[in-house]
Image (cartoon, rainbow, N blue to C red; front, side, top):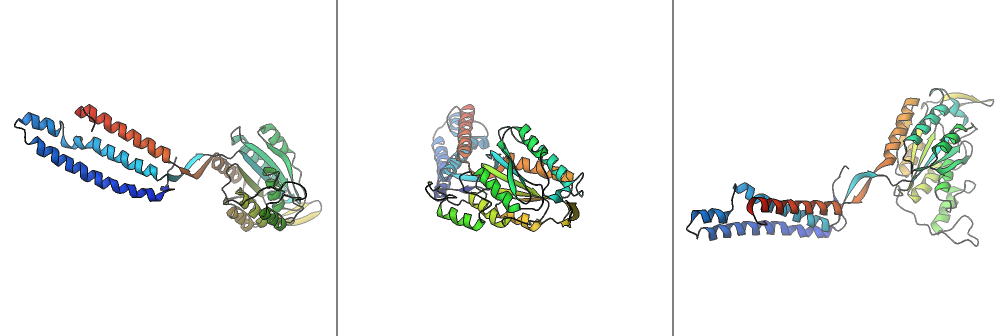
Length: 353
């Protein structure tokens, strides 16, 4: 874990820390009072016993530890939180993969499609066995080619079945991915994104008729920790819904969309089914999709870069940094210091503090 600066859910409770200087003054007063009482005895040995055995510095260690324990207990009352790295709770990952004709370009060896397939298989192999992975393939339209599953064999088989098609509909890929994660959300590529957003705000389903309306309430972007979408593409959107508007739908669900751009930024002329065109990478749109959903954009200019990107995403999804209440940890540390203080006092002076 990598603790970050603490914040507090009950910051007003921090006023209790003003008790600490009072306790320090009380300790100093008790030491002086004890010394005065000890000087009344004639016997020097009795004086030494009253003042405490051993070096004077060691005499203060148990009270100091106890004071530290008390300070931590007061902090615990304020319910501290910190951004720490913990095992991710994400249980479902949707891989939205571009299968448009431009993916046959060979600027990424052996070509963009094969490189993306190999990298995706490597990513799948790195995921915990309990993580469900679904695959959405998109070109002019988008479709779910493999529902979320823990079967790595089914996932690999789905990736191997990719067939290149015309056009690029990145917005459709996002909507189909959301429809996979939220089957009752009413997401449909045949319906405008704007009308879907308006319906969500009203709390209705795709056909409001006699069906029970689903209660929908927008959440903070990036706050949904049970799923994530990874979208890989090599080109600009040429058809389908606006990907930025679709990204806002995902943001309202709290789902992060990690975007991966593959290929050269300047693009490459590609021939496909009698057509010839230049496939350009729209990095600005991919960055914006990631920004809207509180995720990140990655660029992969070659096959090795693509594998590194997927490895980075794998570690990010397995371990995640999030705001977590650490009251129990602070309380446990306070209890440990209190026990150590008592043990040292008994060991050195045969008494509790």
